[in-house]
Structure formats: structure tokens, C-alpha cells
View (cartoon, rainbow, N blue to C red):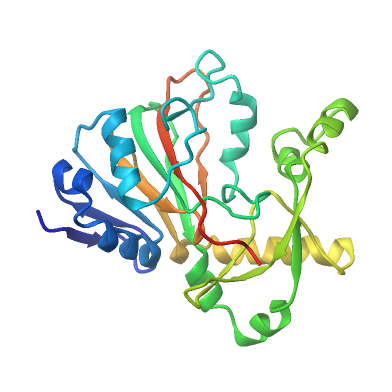
Length: 271
């Protein structure tokens, strides 16, 4: 079955209409990857698929991270009874990209809505390719050679502004990662590497560094670069982790919201 593509905003987000067989057999996989890179996020509605089919679809698009959950499916929930790392997942309520502390960040994430919250729980995505491309030339020149340090500790201040010494020591066990502020991809396109883990810019005074990171985040997440997904049960959504940032909107921890996630392994380093 051919793909029907419906763009949802000018710069980011498309719905693709097709059938399960087309996704599982991979005949349109290259086209889907091209659309994903161009649009940042894509989703499929009303497919009614299983975990096994979700993994099969993922494998047509790249190599999955086998250690992610059970059988390639990780349960995303703020309920500690479902996910023992629920407290850590609270960081997902702030703009970020996954794998910022790794040399090879995840290529993409695949998320399927199992159950939803009655209030909140939408997911927002911003296109960091387009955000860079539309920066004024003066800003592009100013940040061209800057490098930024990402750390797990920095992201946790969003969740717990007054962490204890023990909490800080725990998060500092995760080594930081230094990467370019502007990522030049093997395709030749450039994107911004920002988000909640972005701690400071190398060589800049702390005040100037934090102000610059906040200004670039605000620029990248302005409405014209953002798509907000209103979930329906069964939605299958794929986001380009190397060309977007994302965040979930707040929802009650006891709401029962549950997503099943499969991750595609990174294919190029941030250098």
C-alpha cells in the first residue's frame, strides 16, 4: 500500500497513512526514513499493532537497542509499580534529546500509546534542523565553533532544584559529554544540540553560557518550530532523535499513562 503523507505544520510533523503489512515488510522503509529526517516526527493512527509488530517495524528502519526493556520494548510510565526509574523519567517533562551523554545518540525513538491520562500527557517536538537553518547569519557565525558540555546532573536540577549532597554525588557519577553546539551531520545539514542536559558552553563565563543556551532553546522551541501531538490509544509515533528535541507535558503520576518505546541505535557521532 502506498504512503499517504499529511504535513501537520510548516516545519515539523506528518501523519502517514498506510497499512500494517506495508510497515512490517519494510517495502517503504527508505521513504519513511527520508520523511522522518525531513519532518522530524511522523505518526500512524489506527493500526492496532502488538509489541512484536512494533519491534518488527523498528527493525525495518534501523538497528534496535536490544537492551531497551524486554524484547526491545521499554515501558514509559511515571508509576513506580510499572517502571522503577519513574523518578528519572520526570526529566522527560523538559526539552531534551535522548543519548546526549553518549558518543552516538539514538537515531530515533518509536512510541506507542497503550493507555493515556485524562489530563495532560501530550508530547511536543521541535525541529532543531530548521531552528538552526533559520537563525540569523550573525548568530550562526557566533556559535559555529562552540562546544557544550552535557551532564545528567544538570538535567536533574529541573526536577529537584534543591538536590541533597547525596543526590548530586549520585548524578555526578555519570560522566559528562562534550560535543559541538552545532552538529554537522553526514548529510551536510546542521542542527542544534541543546536541552535539559546542556550544562555550559566551554570557554564562556557561566552567566554568558547559561544565557546563550536559554536563548537558543527559546528560539528552537518557538511555536513555528513545534508540533504538539494529541495522543489517541494505539498511535505509533516515530521521532528523529538527531534532529529534534521533545518533551511530555505534565500529567498526574497516578493517571495510568503508559507508552511502549523502542529505540533505534545511533548511526553517527556528535563531532
